[in-house]
Length: 450
Image (tube, rainbow, N blue to C red):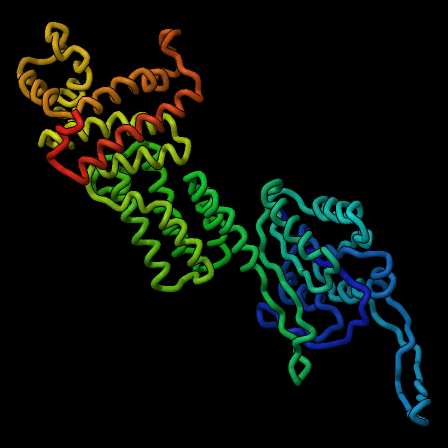
């Protein structure tokens, strides 16, 4: 791992000015590179590199020392005639200006084409990528980037994040044209735009696929360089706990975020609101609304509503195994709710609700029941009072759930295609939701569905 400073040198007639740099240094030079290296890289070691990309023209004009005629006076003889006097002047090139500083860091020059066509742009891309190694920390100066280079630089940096796991320490632009009356030019830090791009990718991954790991990974990296990310990291961890609670089927309503998606959701939303209220990172406020909107289906506080939200999330995000588990358990919860039973009591769920699901097909032949005597009367009541659609759904998904949970090692005639497992989960959920919606709209009148 090394630190790399990457910059392009152009062919302009660069004039001397004072650059006010990110860490506070004010450096007088023709070259923004000199100012940034002085401010950001002077403590770097011989393992690190300052890399300057050069076309043939920029190498001759601004990298090497050169002699040029410059205007020293101008006399207007008449409106039609002006006499311009020029003297030859030696210009110190960027190479010697950097080397004369005697930094420990290596100064490296790389030749590139001018980027006049697509092939040349790809060549520039490859030269840039070859300069970056695994786990490098990179600073990019885009001040003298030309044509498509600024866009290409952003592509290279994001490609290198994936391919070589690099970190971006900074992206800078020396605004010579914005210098003040004293000739001091500001240097703009543009890394926030790169961060916004990363936020967009990461939150899109959550919104489309329910996966928060990209958000956590990004924020974990950035908190090393920016203190405000520590508060954001707290949110990212809680968001990850929320998705982990879904992935590990923590569907019961409890107060512990490590054991309940209900508590994990509340904890995450509280942290999200803290970021919003403190305006810790206003730039991402609109993106955070997408997180809030995506997860809002868990804004409820009973086992049945949480269970229905859980199954819907699993279908949306292709969590098929978790979806079948959640659907099966939510049917048990629904049976308990409809029959005024404690839906959090394990014995009631397994010895009464689950057994009622199992014996439904033998409701008229109790000799085939495998049920303890003490529970039989209650199960009879459940079979009588619960809409038959619920039992039919439970029976239909039992084969699919066994196929998944037993790793495919079931009877050959009961093994289902992947596409069938996925489609059936959605179909059965919609069938259950129809009964559930009727329950919400008309509690106590479900016998009309029988």
